[in-house]
Image (cartoon, rainbow, N blue to C red; front, side):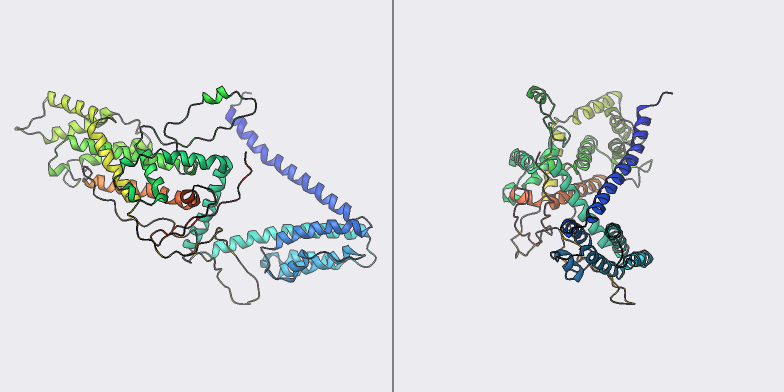
Length: 515
């Protein structure tokens, strides 16, 4: 029987988790068998080093669940005392751990912990070394698994107790940290930092009036707007890694993107590409609007014959093409020509008839105006992008009094327990503090400025929507990569933000091994 490659891929994907599970179980069983075998040795000098390692594992697992000064953590972090019966001492410590966890676990786990406590209470003075070793190994393994389950319980409790604002901040924190970590895995700092600098060096200040008065740390935004003005689509291709033995000539033949963005835009690039398409659609709509002189009843939807204004109909065609709506197909120039001719016919009267010659002239004018090198198209595009840059980069304010910022990502500390019977405290995450790194990452901006040639109500509405789309991507990227944007380096020391800038530095995640 023939099967498609896709069906085969699905079969392989289904088999992979089963294989991973079998490997996981095999490795864990081998590890714990070795632990039990080592602890079964009669010599304390052999048992103690293994117990020391197991205590370190317990310490790492229990730190998030117990207060910093808890006696259990002190015991686990201290050197093991020399003793002739290390396994019996370990059993006493394990019982103390289980009692401490029972005080802090969810009620549903009480019965399971009681069973574990009962087991460590069972061995008598006549128990063999092998029996004690088995008990210690199984109990430590159970405690490690229990600690992970309690952490999961704690996470679910915290998320369940959060209001929408706190939950959004936690999700934002994780998303930002994971995005930066992902990009640094693909582009280590040794490649990312030069790519950022080279991209910035291509900025053409003459395109933006008032550029010189802008803070250097915000000039990257002008460079991004300049990329929107380029002829090609914005792109952020994956890095090219030379495999050992590959000739240099092959790499030289790889096609490079003509309008490539640097690695910090790797995740936001798809949304920036959509925004670039919307900017082009706005210029097209404004260009078509400049070709026809419409009476008032065709400039608004209220009095139009079909309930839609001329620009509303044009924008519907352009938007359907951008968003690839079902049945939209590819919007062609002929579709836009038809709209211009249609509205011209509707405006015709005895004094100003719409003749075939005039229709032909209009179609030619539409085709000419929508060319990227047409003077009208270029003028409207320039006005739109200059307005975008002005809106994204407000005039520099006087420096405000600097205030401290966290040097590490805002961490979430939870201390739960049953020390307050009958009183259920709501977890405080510190996210309402002005110092929180993940609250209010979006800048507050007013409506876009009036743009000559874009005065129609449809264009005003869509300019605002497109600008806000770009603004979110800009603020998100700036929040994550503020160290790079202010110092040119990953993890560089950046200046405190002014009160006009609520952003704070997002500390980099651990730098991956350089490739």
